[in-house]
Image (cartoon, rainbow, N blue to C red; front, side, top):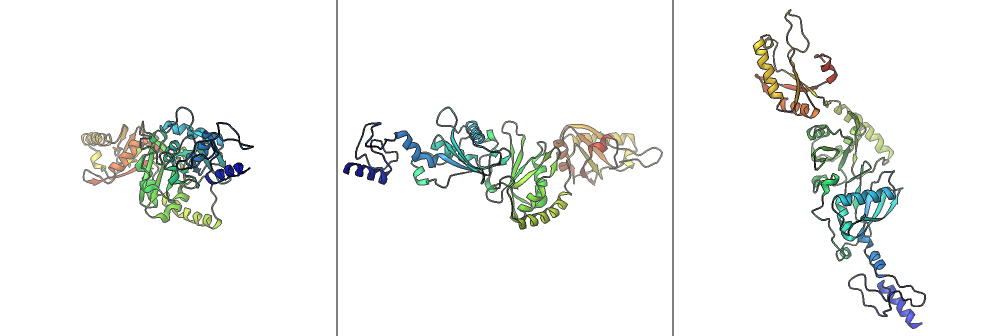
Length: 392
Protein backbone atom coordinates (compact mmCIF):
# COMPACT_ATOMS: atom_id res chain seq x y z
CA UNK A 1 0.00 0.00 0.00
CA UNK A 2 2.84 2.39 0.86
CA UNK A 3 4.45 1.55 -2.47
CA UNK A 4 1.22 2.37 -4.37
CA UNK A 5 0.93 5.77 -2.63
CA UNK A 6 4.52 6.60 -3.51
CA UNK A 7 3.97 5.66 -7.12
CA UNK A 8 0.80 7.76 -7.41
CA UNK A 9 2.60 10.71 -5.83
CA UNK A 10 5.35 10.39 -8.43
CA UNK A 11 2.80 10.45 -11.26
CA UNK A 12 0.99 13.48 -9.79
CA UNK A 13 4.17 15.48 -9.31
CA UNK A 14 6.04 14.68 -12.47
CA UNK A 15 3.44 13.48 -14.99
CA UNK A 16 5.52 10.34 -15.44
CA UNK A 17 4.29 6.77 -15.18
CA UNK A 18 6.89 4.46 -13.65
CA UNK A 19 8.57 2.19 -16.10
CA UNK A 20 8.84 4.67 -18.93
CA UNK A 21 11.61 7.02 -20.01
CA UNK A 22 11.04 10.74 -19.32
CA UNK A 23 9.37 12.45 -22.28
CA UNK A 24 10.63 15.90 -21.31
CA UNK A 25 14.25 16.75 -20.49
CA UNK A 26 14.75 17.59 -16.84
CA UNK A 27 12.23 15.12 -15.40
CA UNK A 28 13.34 12.95 -12.47
CA UNK A 29 14.49 9.41 -13.23
CA UNK A 30 12.13 6.55 -12.50
CA UNK A 31 11.82 5.76 -8.85
CA UNK A 32 10.22 2.35 -9.37
CA UNK A 33 11.25 0.89 -12.76
CA UNK A 34 8.95 -1.73 -14.21
CA UNK A 35 9.26 -3.78 -17.35
CA UNK A 36 7.66 -2.58 -20.56
CA UNK A 37 3.96 -3.27 -20.55
CA UNK A 38 4.04 -4.46 -16.92
CA UNK A 39 1.18 -3.29 -14.70
CA UNK A 40 1.35 -2.37 -11.05
CA UNK A 41 -1.97 -3.06 -9.43
CA UNK A 42 -4.66 -1.66 -11.73
CA UNK A 43 -2.52 1.13 -13.29
CA UNK A 44 -1.59 0.49 -16.97
CA UNK A 45 1.84 1.60 -18.13
CA UNK A 46 1.60 4.23 -20.93
CA UNK A 47 3.92 3.62 -23.93
CA UNK A 48 6.80 6.08 -24.34
CA UNK A 49 5.54 7.13 -27.81
CA UNK A 50 2.09 8.07 -26.48
CA UNK A 51 3.61 10.16 -23.71
CA UNK A 52 5.92 11.92 -26.19
CA UNK A 53 2.97 12.76 -28.44
CA UNK A 54 1.03 14.18 -25.53
CA UNK A 55 3.98 16.24 -24.32
CA UNK A 56 4.64 17.73 -27.78
CA UNK A 57 1.02 18.20 -28.77
CA UNK A 58 0.89 21.91 -27.88
CA UNK A 59 3.84 22.50 -30.24
CA UNK A 60 2.44 20.30 -33.04
CA UNK A 61 -0.93 22.05 -33.32
CA UNK A 62 -1.71 25.24 -35.25
CA UNK A 63 -4.75 27.48 -34.98
CA UNK A 64 -6.53 28.22 -38.27
CA UNK A 65 -9.06 31.07 -38.11
CA UNK A 66 -11.49 32.66 -40.55
CA UNK A 67 -12.69 29.38 -42.07
CA UNK A 68 -15.63 29.55 -44.51
CA UNK A 69 -18.90 27.87 -43.41
CA UNK A 70 -18.34 25.02 -45.90
CA UNK A 71 -15.15 23.83 -44.21
CA UNK A 72 -15.09 20.41 -42.55
CA UNK A 73 -12.45 18.25 -40.89
CA UNK A 74 -11.69 16.27 -44.04
CA UNK A 75 -11.41 19.28 -46.34
CA UNK A 76 -9.12 21.12 -43.90
CA UNK A 77 -6.91 18.06 -43.38
CA UNK A 78 -6.63 17.39 -47.11
CA UNK A 79 -5.92 21.03 -47.94
CA UNK A 80 -3.16 21.55 -45.37
CA UNK A 81 -1.55 18.19 -46.12
CA UNK A 82 -1.49 19.15 -49.79
CA UNK A 83 -0.02 22.62 -49.32
CA UNK A 84 2.54 21.36 -46.80
CA UNK A 85 3.78 18.89 -49.39
CA UNK A 86 3.71 21.59 -52.10
CA UNK A 87 5.94 24.00 -50.16
CA UNK A 88 8.36 21.27 -49.07
CA UNK A 89 7.28 21.57 -45.45
CA UNK A 90 7.04 17.84 -44.74
CA UNK A 91 10.01 16.74 -42.63
CA UNK A 92 8.67 13.60 -40.96
CA UNK A 93 8.87 11.42 -44.05
CA UNK A 94 6.29 10.39 -46.67
CA UNK A 95 2.58 10.66 -46.02
CA UNK A 96 0.22 13.42 -44.88
CA UNK A 97 1.52 16.04 -42.48
CA UNK A 98 -1.89 16.44 -40.79
CA UNK A 99 -2.87 13.77 -38.28
CA UNK A 100 -5.95 15.34 -36.72
CA UNK A 101 -8.35 18.30 -37.14
CA UNK A 102 -10.85 19.76 -34.71
CA UNK A 103 -13.28 22.40 -36.04
CA UNK A 104 -15.41 24.85 -34.09
CA UNK A 105 -18.05 25.54 -36.74
CA UNK A 106 -19.78 28.24 -34.72
CA UNK A 107 -16.65 30.37 -34.41
CA UNK A 108 -15.16 29.25 -37.73
CA UNK A 109 -11.77 28.10 -36.51
CA UNK A 110 -9.89 24.83 -36.34
CA UNK A 111 -6.97 23.23 -34.54
CA UNK A 112 -4.81 21.33 -37.03
CA UNK A 113 -2.43 18.79 -35.51
CA UNK A 114 0.75 17.97 -37.42
CA UNK A 115 2.99 14.89 -37.16
CA UNK A 116 6.00 16.79 -35.84
CA UNK A 117 6.98 20.02 -34.13
CA UNK A 118 9.04 21.06 -37.15
CA UNK A 119 6.11 20.57 -39.52
CA UNK A 120 3.88 22.69 -37.28
CA UNK A 121 6.50 25.45 -37.36
CA UNK A 122 6.65 25.22 -41.16
CA UNK A 123 2.86 25.53 -41.28
CA UNK A 124 3.15 28.95 -39.61
CA UNK A 125 4.43 30.26 -42.95
CA UNK A 126 0.96 29.61 -44.42
CA UNK A 127 -0.67 32.57 -42.70
CA UNK A 128 -2.98 34.31 -45.17
CA UNK A 129 -3.29 31.36 -47.56
CA UNK A 130 -6.54 31.19 -49.52
CA UNK A 131 -8.76 28.29 -48.45
CA UNK A 132 -12.03 27.84 -50.38
CA UNK A 133 -11.92 31.46 -51.54
CA UNK A 134 -11.12 33.04 -48.17
CA UNK A 135 -7.79 34.02 -46.59
CA UNK A 136 -7.29 32.20 -43.31
CA UNK A 137 -5.16 33.04 -40.28
CA UNK A 138 -2.56 30.52 -39.16
CA UNK A 139 -1.38 31.08 -35.59
CA UNK A 140 -0.03 29.23 -32.58
CA UNK A 141 -2.73 27.88 -30.24
CA UNK A 142 -3.31 29.56 -26.89
CA UNK A 143 -1.70 26.64 -24.98
CA UNK A 144 1.54 26.95 -26.95
CA UNK A 145 4.54 27.17 -24.58
CA UNK A 146 7.44 28.89 -26.44
CA UNK A 147 10.14 28.08 -23.88
CA UNK A 148 9.16 24.43 -23.71
CA UNK A 149 8.67 24.19 -27.48
CA UNK A 150 12.20 25.47 -28.03
CA UNK A 151 13.51 22.21 -26.53
CA UNK A 152 11.36 20.08 -28.84
CA UNK A 153 12.29 21.34 -32.30
CA UNK A 154 12.50 24.42 -34.59
CA UNK A 155 10.17 27.25 -33.57
CA UNK A 156 10.35 29.15 -36.88
CA UNK A 157 9.46 28.04 -40.44
CA UNK A 158 12.27 26.79 -42.64
CA UNK A 159 13.45 29.84 -44.66
CA UNK A 160 13.79 27.68 -47.79
CA UNK A 161 10.11 26.75 -48.06
CA UNK A 162 8.70 27.11 -51.58
CA UNK A 163 5.82 29.41 -50.62
CA UNK A 164 5.44 30.59 -54.21
CA UNK A 165 4.07 27.13 -55.07
CA UNK A 166 0.88 28.01 -53.17
CA UNK A 167 0.70 31.69 -54.10
CA UNK A 168 2.42 33.12 -51.04
CA UNK A 169 5.38 35.49 -51.18
CA UNK A 170 7.96 35.31 -48.36
CA UNK A 171 8.07 38.62 -46.56
CA UNK A 172 5.49 40.20 -48.87
CA UNK A 173 3.37 41.17 -45.90
CA UNK A 174 5.91 43.86 -44.88
CA UNK A 175 3.57 46.77 -44.32
CA UNK A 176 0.62 44.49 -45.00
CA UNK A 177 0.14 43.04 -41.53
CA UNK A 178 -2.33 44.09 -38.89
CA UNK A 179 -6.10 44.48 -38.58
CA UNK A 180 -6.32 46.97 -41.48
CA UNK A 181 -4.90 44.59 -44.06
CA UNK A 182 -7.41 44.22 -46.93
CA UNK A 183 -8.02 41.11 -49.01
CA UNK A 184 -9.08 41.83 -52.63
CA UNK A 185 -10.35 38.71 -54.39
CA UNK A 186 -12.17 37.96 -57.62
CA UNK A 187 -9.87 40.13 -59.73
CA UNK A 188 -9.97 39.45 -63.49
CA UNK A 189 -6.73 37.73 -64.42
CA UNK A 190 -6.03 40.23 -67.20
CA UNK A 191 -6.01 43.19 -64.79
CA UNK A 192 -2.51 44.58 -64.51
CA UNK A 193 -0.92 45.62 -61.23
CA UNK A 194 -1.17 49.26 -62.32
CA UNK A 195 -4.91 48.93 -63.02
CA UNK A 196 -5.60 47.34 -59.64
CA UNK A 197 -3.58 49.97 -57.82
CA UNK A 198 -5.41 52.70 -59.72
CA UNK A 199 -8.74 51.24 -58.63
CA UNK A 200 -7.70 50.92 -54.99
CA UNK A 201 -6.05 54.33 -54.87
CA UNK A 202 -9.30 56.05 -55.78
CA UNK A 203 -9.90 55.93 -52.03
CA UNK A 204 -6.45 57.16 -51.02
CA UNK A 205 -2.73 56.34 -51.30
CA UNK A 206 -1.58 52.85 -50.37
CA UNK A 207 1.01 52.05 -47.73
CA UNK A 208 1.48 48.54 -49.07
CA UNK A 209 0.23 46.45 -52.00
CA UNK A 210 0.84 42.86 -53.07
CA UNK A 211 -0.71 41.27 -56.16
CA UNK A 212 -0.30 37.50 -55.76
CA UNK A 213 1.18 35.94 -58.89
CA UNK A 214 1.93 32.46 -60.14
CA UNK A 215 5.60 31.73 -59.52
CA UNK A 216 6.12 29.92 -62.82
CA UNK A 217 4.22 32.16 -65.25
CA UNK A 218 4.22 35.48 -63.40
CA UNK A 219 0.50 35.82 -64.12
CA UNK A 220 -1.97 37.18 -61.60
CA UNK A 221 -3.76 34.59 -59.45
CA UNK A 222 -6.77 36.86 -59.12
CA UNK A 223 -6.30 38.23 -55.62
CA UNK A 224 -4.23 40.81 -53.78
CA UNK A 225 -3.64 42.43 -50.39
CA UNK A 226 -3.28 46.10 -49.53
CA UNK A 227 -3.13 48.56 -46.65
CA UNK A 228 -4.05 52.26 -46.91
CA UNK A 229 -1.90 55.03 -45.53
CA UNK A 230 -5.03 56.56 -44.03
CA UNK A 231 -6.49 53.64 -42.08
CA UNK A 232 -9.83 55.44 -41.70
CA UNK A 233 -10.69 54.65 -45.36
CA UNK A 234 -10.26 50.88 -44.90
CA UNK A 235 -13.94 50.14 -44.29
CA UNK A 236 -15.03 52.70 -46.89
CA UNK A 237 -13.00 50.97 -49.60
CA UNK A 238 -14.18 47.51 -48.51
CA UNK A 239 -17.84 48.56 -48.52
CA UNK A 240 -17.59 50.30 -51.89
CA UNK A 241 -15.64 47.64 -53.76
CA UNK A 242 -17.11 44.44 -52.33
CA UNK A 243 -19.58 42.91 -54.78
CA UNK A 244 -18.60 45.18 -57.68
CA UNK A 245 -18.76 43.47 -61.09
CA UNK A 246 -15.50 43.52 -63.03
CA UNK A 247 -15.96 41.86 -66.39
CA UNK A 248 -17.06 38.29 -65.68
CA UNK A 249 -15.85 38.49 -62.06
CA UNK A 250 -17.31 39.82 -58.81
CA UNK A 251 -14.92 41.42 -56.34
CA UNK A 252 -14.64 40.15 -52.77
CA UNK A 253 -13.10 42.91 -50.68
CA UNK A 254 -12.85 42.80 -46.87
CA UNK A 255 -10.43 43.03 -44.00
CA UNK A 256 -8.13 40.02 -44.32
CA UNK A 257 -8.65 39.02 -40.68
CA UNK A 258 -12.42 38.75 -41.13
CA UNK A 259 -14.06 35.60 -42.41
CA UNK A 260 -16.67 35.61 -45.13
CA UNK A 261 -20.15 36.78 -44.16
CA UNK A 262 -18.97 37.98 -40.76
CA UNK A 263 -21.87 39.96 -39.23
CA UNK A 264 -21.41 43.56 -38.16
CA UNK A 265 -23.30 45.58 -35.56
CA UNK A 266 -26.38 47.30 -36.95
CA UNK A 267 -25.06 50.82 -36.41
CA UNK A 268 -21.81 49.96 -38.21
CA UNK A 269 -23.77 48.59 -41.15
CA UNK A 270 -25.71 51.84 -41.43
CA UNK A 271 -22.49 53.85 -41.35
CA UNK A 272 -20.85 51.68 -43.99
CA UNK A 273 -23.91 52.00 -46.22
CA UNK A 274 -23.58 55.77 -46.14
CA UNK A 275 -19.85 55.53 -46.77
CA UNK A 276 -20.48 53.20 -49.68
CA UNK A 277 -22.64 55.74 -51.45
CA UNK A 278 -19.85 58.31 -51.26
CA UNK A 279 -17.23 55.82 -52.35
CA UNK A 280 -19.30 54.58 -55.29
CA UNK A 281 -19.58 58.10 -56.64
CA UNK A 282 -15.79 58.24 -56.73
CA UNK A 283 -15.61 54.75 -58.21
CA UNK A 284 -17.79 55.80 -61.15
CA UNK A 285 -14.97 58.05 -62.30
CA UNK A 286 -12.67 55.07 -62.80
CA UNK A 287 -12.31 53.90 -66.43
CA UNK A 288 -13.34 50.40 -67.45
CA UNK A 289 -10.44 48.86 -69.40
CA UNK A 290 -11.02 47.82 -73.02
CA UNK A 291 -8.77 46.75 -75.89
CA UNK A 292 -9.24 50.09 -77.67
CA UNK A 293 -7.51 53.33 -76.70
CA UNK A 294 -8.72 56.66 -78.07
CA UNK A 295 -6.21 59.50 -78.34
CA UNK A 296 -7.40 63.08 -78.62
CA UNK A 297 -5.55 66.35 -79.15
CA UNK A 298 -3.10 64.47 -81.36
CA UNK A 299 -3.91 65.73 -84.85
CA UNK A 300 -6.00 68.44 -86.52
CA UNK A 301 -8.36 68.14 -89.44
CA UNK A 302 -6.04 70.17 -91.67
CA UNK A 303 -3.15 67.78 -91.05
CA UNK A 304 -5.28 64.87 -92.21
CA UNK A 305 -6.30 66.33 -95.56
CA UNK A 306 -2.95 65.79 -97.27
CA UNK A 307 -2.44 62.14 -98.25
CA UNK A 308 1.32 62.08 -97.64
CA UNK A 309 1.00 63.80 -94.28
CA UNK A 310 -1.81 61.42 -93.33
CA UNK A 311 0.34 58.38 -94.15
CA UNK A 312 3.22 59.81 -92.09
CA UNK A 313 0.92 60.33 -89.10
CA UNK A 314 -0.51 56.82 -89.48
CA UNK A 315 2.96 55.30 -89.55
CA UNK A 316 4.05 57.36 -86.53
CA UNK A 317 1.06 56.15 -84.53
CA UNK A 318 1.74 52.52 -85.49
CA UNK A 319 5.31 52.89 -84.31
CA UNK A 320 4.44 54.62 -81.04
CA UNK A 321 1.44 52.42 -80.28
CA UNK A 322 3.38 49.24 -81.03
CA UNK A 323 5.77 49.99 -78.17
CA UNK A 324 3.11 49.04 -75.62
CA UNK A 325 1.73 45.80 -77.06
CA UNK A 326 0.49 43.92 -80.12
CA UNK A 327 -1.52 46.33 -82.28
CA UNK A 328 -4.43 44.88 -84.22
CA UNK A 329 -5.55 48.08 -85.95
CA UNK A 330 -4.95 51.83 -86.10
CA UNK A 331 -7.83 54.05 -87.21
CA UNK A 332 -7.50 57.79 -87.84
CA UNK A 333 -10.76 59.22 -89.22
CA UNK A 334 -10.25 61.82 -92.00
CA UNK A 335 -12.35 64.83 -93.06
CA UNK A 336 -14.83 64.27 -95.84
CA UNK A 337 -14.02 65.70 -99.24
CA UNK A 338 -17.38 67.44 -99.53
CA UNK A 339 -16.71 69.50 -96.45
CA UNK A 340 -19.36 67.76 -94.36
CA UNK A 341 -18.47 66.89 -90.77
CA UNK A 342 -17.06 63.40 -90.32
CA UNK A 343 -17.24 61.31 -87.14
CA UNK A 344 -14.15 61.11 -85.00
CA UNK A 345 -11.95 63.57 -86.91
CA UNK A 346 -9.08 64.62 -84.69
CA UNK A 347 -9.04 61.29 -82.83
CA UNK A 348 -6.69 58.33 -83.14
CA UNK A 349 -7.90 54.82 -82.26
CA UNK A 350 -5.45 52.10 -81.28
CA UNK A 351 -6.86 48.58 -81.09
CA UNK A 352 -4.74 46.04 -79.19
CA UNK A 353 -4.77 42.27 -79.06
CA UNK A 354 -5.36 42.34 -75.31
CA UNK A 355 -6.35 44.65 -72.49
CA UNK A 356 -2.87 44.59 -71.01
CA UNK A 357 -1.41 46.24 -74.11
CA UNK A 358 -4.21 48.80 -74.21
CA UNK A 359 -3.72 49.61 -70.54
CA UNK A 360 -0.02 50.17 -71.00
CA UNK A 361 -0.71 52.42 -73.98
CA UNK A 362 -3.27 54.48 -72.07
CA UNK A 363 -0.90 54.97 -69.15
CA UNK A 364 2.13 55.57 -71.33
CA UNK A 365 0.64 57.97 -73.85
CA UNK A 366 -1.70 60.03 -71.69
CA UNK A 367 -0.14 63.44 -71.12
CA UNK A 368 2.67 62.96 -73.65
CA UNK A 369 3.45 65.49 -76.34
CA UNK A 370 2.84 64.53 -79.97
CA UNK A 371 3.40 67.13 -82.66
CA UNK A 372 3.41 69.82 -79.99
CA UNK A 373 0.06 68.72 -78.54
CA UNK A 374 -0.50 67.14 -75.12
CA UNK A 375 -2.22 63.82 -75.70
CA UNK A 376 -5.32 62.69 -73.80
CA UNK A 377 -5.68 58.87 -73.80
CA UNK A 378 -8.86 57.07 -72.70
CA UNK A 379 -10.36 53.62 -73.11
CA UNK A 380 -12.98 53.38 -75.86
CA UNK A 381 -15.99 50.99 -75.99
CA UNK A 382 -15.10 48.00 -78.14
CA UNK A 383 -18.62 47.58 -79.49
CA UNK A 384 -18.76 51.20 -80.64
CA UNK A 385 -15.36 50.90 -82.31
CA UNK A 386 -16.32 47.70 -84.16
CA UNK A 387 -19.45 49.44 -85.46
CA UNK A 388 -17.44 52.39 -86.75
CA UNK A 389 -19.03 54.74 -84.21
CA UNK A 390 -16.19 57.13 -83.41
CA UNK A 391 -18.19 59.78 -81.60
CA UNK A 392 -19.12 57.80 -78.49
